[in-house]
Image: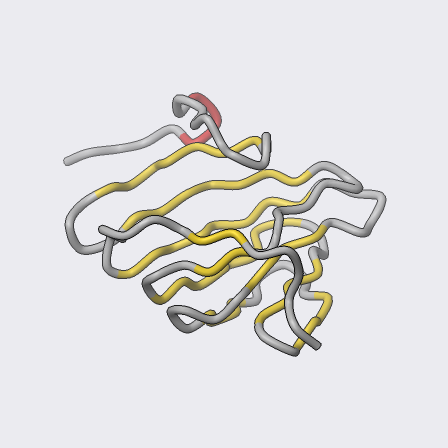
Length: 117
């Protein structure tokens, strides 16, 4: 049995300088615990695999393709492969999100200037 203490999991070097920890990593899936402080956000990017976001705490705004919605805790948002997406914390409270990539990507994430409207 493998048990991960998320609070003490090693932090990842994240290109967006966001507080992240990879808490699960197999050939089948990757799970990342992400914390966004108020005002923090990811940059728009395209992931080569399906991703879903499960909001643990807070109310981040999630943008996928042309849709942008504020999501609260205990909601899951599906983001299909190769669709630009981004997460913003436009609130004044911390947001914690589980990011699940299925399967584990073998291609690099592609960054985009902005998501097309």
